[in-house]
Every structure is written in structure tokens, then in C-alpha cells.
Figure 1: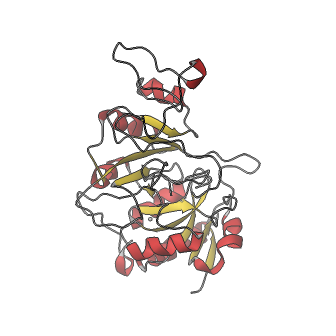
Figure 2: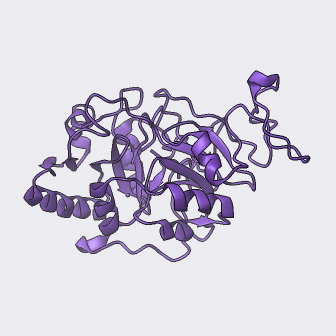
Figure 3: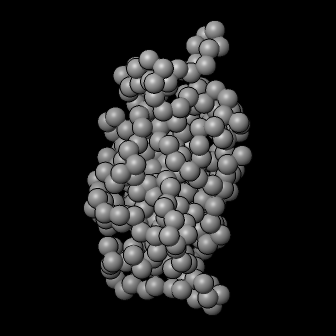
Length: 314
């Protein structure tokens, strides 16, 4: 496989790079693209072969499925089922941006993102180049552009050092987020139960989330009691919520901010790896998402459904 890099700060190379990336995605290959958090490696979310190629390039298994990036808010309804009203409020307020929502995936879809436990981690990135690519390809399974266990790449050239010829197209657009700044992963919220729960702290603070949905449960907090008491944190004497005693979201747990793996919740649909990670059409045509489509996406074990364990998720 030949590998090509494009300097997308040049209008001419940007157009050529997007066209080549679309063809690569349609051919079930993987590309490296910028997001608002870090660079991600992306594949057609609807192609099991492409997702397998993405996981192999990163050196990770099916137990850490990638999140799915989408080009617009209403795409969520094609991929996720039973989206709570509060989750929709967060999406409307913080998308595009650093928020990943773990939702139940549409049962009608037959995708294979890995061991997702019927969930998908979804995010709409706040990056013009990423959104332009997503618009012509459709939803992409995306994970941070690095080998598992290594630092997430903040430029396409850094990603190429680690991923080399396993990637067909590298879209270089400068540092993400900004040179000299520490990247933050997206905040991951489990929306598979009536009460939303933060399972990985990140770019969107709990305080900002509660300005939109006051009932959101934070890390280390017990759910709000029936009498309306405020959530109790571990520092106030309460034991941290564990996977065994959590409310309906029995598998939700904080995702460590270190590169143990990085939608998904369900390679974080939740989801962007160290800074979170990064989506096909045949014959160069724009990919059309099947109606009612959903993206299964979540790891097994103590992690939240559909999240990766790497520090950052795109």
C-alpha cells in the first residue's frame, strides 16, 4: 500500500487530500485526520474489514472498540436508539465539541466495531477539516493516531512515525489542539440509563454539563437521592460508585487518562484513546448512512460500554 501525506493548510492539497481520503475510506483502508483534540486514525464505521484494519494498525484487540465521529447532530438518531432527552440536550449544547456520549446502538445495524455490548460512543468534533471529511464519507470509527501504549499524535507527521505504511492517507493540518498546549480528551458521558453519568473527565467540565442537565452524576458520586439531595462525593464520606453498585449503568467506570488503550465508548461511540481517537463510500461516492443505523461500540470489563481505556479519545 502506498502512503501519501497532504499539507491541508494549502487549499490545493487540502482538496486533493480530502478526495484521496474519501477513496481510501471507500476502499476499506484507514486514514489519519485531525480532530479538535488530537489526530485520529479513521475507518469506515460500517465496514468490519476496515475497523479490523484500524485496530491492527494500533495494535489493539476487539475488547477496545473505537468511538464513532459523526458530521452532524441528527446523525445520532440513525446510529443510536432510545436517546434520553437529557443526552440530546447535552449534544445540542456541546456539539461540535469535546463531548462523547455512550448510547444504545440501533439494533437494526449489523456493524462490527468490536466488543461493544450493544452500545456506541458518538461525538461530533469541532474541527473544520474533520467535519468536511465526515460529510463526504459518513460516520467514521476513530481512535487516536498512535500505537497502543504510545503518546497520542498532535500532528500527522507524529502519527506517521508510529503508524507508517499501515495508513493510506495522512491529512496534515498543524498541531491539535495548539502547539505547546496539553491536549485534553473528550468528556465521556454514559447515556444508556435515565440518569446520565460521567465516566471519563475531560474537555467539558462537570459544572458546565450541570448548567444544561443538573442531574448529571459526576465521577465518584452517588446518584441523587429520592428526596432530591445533592450527589455525594467520595470526599464527603461516600464510597466511590463502582461497576457493581452503579445504577442501571452497571458497567460504567471512569476511563483512565493514560494510554492503556484509546465509543465509541462504545476506542472512545466514545470516542476519541490518549487524546481521543478517530469513519465509507464506494466508487468515490458520498457514503449514505442507512436509516435507523446504529454503531455498536464498547469494551468489555470495568470500562464503560463503548469506551476505550487510552487516556485520550478523539
